[in-house]
Image 1 (cartoon, helix red, strand yellow):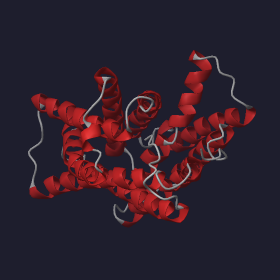
Image 2 (cartoon, rainbow, N blue to C red):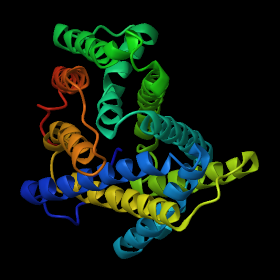
Image 3 (tube, rainbow, N blue to C red):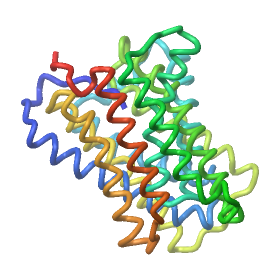
Image 4 (cartoon, rainbow, N blue to C red):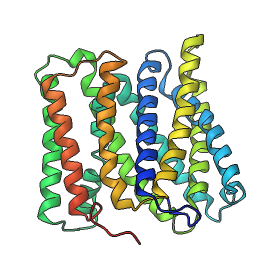
Length: 304
């Protein structure tokens, strides 16, 4: 998520870290809920409820900020459509990964997005990253192999591990493309407009999947889906406010602490005990992502 800093907010790194912490916890809680709801509802239904309900907190936030009028105007609707569809694909792949993997493993694989973007730049743009970045890319791939090791031996193939990992990799790759599109859009449109169009497009795409059949929801599953949408919307608002109060470099590294909350949710709420291979692989992937970010200057860049 790319968000510009508003001049109406005072810089406060301490406040930003608190907001980011609550934002990460909120988004991780949403992932844990999706993990459970995916046992009943298909992916398209999950996308609809997650996006449609999230419109509530986002619209309220924009009204409070006085940015709703700005958010609904754009000179580049086609760019918003492409970004929205890419973001919707990211969400769908993420929900498939959450359906087959623990929250911790799905979160760890999502950190491959910056690593895969480096690989794409090397192939298609002929970029030559420095040695630190290359080491990070190799470590990230090694981390995935560690996570996959039990499945490669055939012990967990029936549990859909490979399907979850494949969806996670597709999510990370699509997310890398989505980030490029978001960066392009921020040159012409405010972040509020991007956030709102994304939620609307995902809601429409999710609703369209009803033609392929939705699950009949009981009261508990419906409550879970509404909660996921509210948490997703609130998480976006919290992270927006965090980025507006601190240099991007400060929050870029802190974002990787989300893996801690993911593992805690797995153990405390879902009762999922991860094995040594999974934890080791997740640690390597997160470390590789941090290394790539540092090599690109994201963790050392001075605020504008």
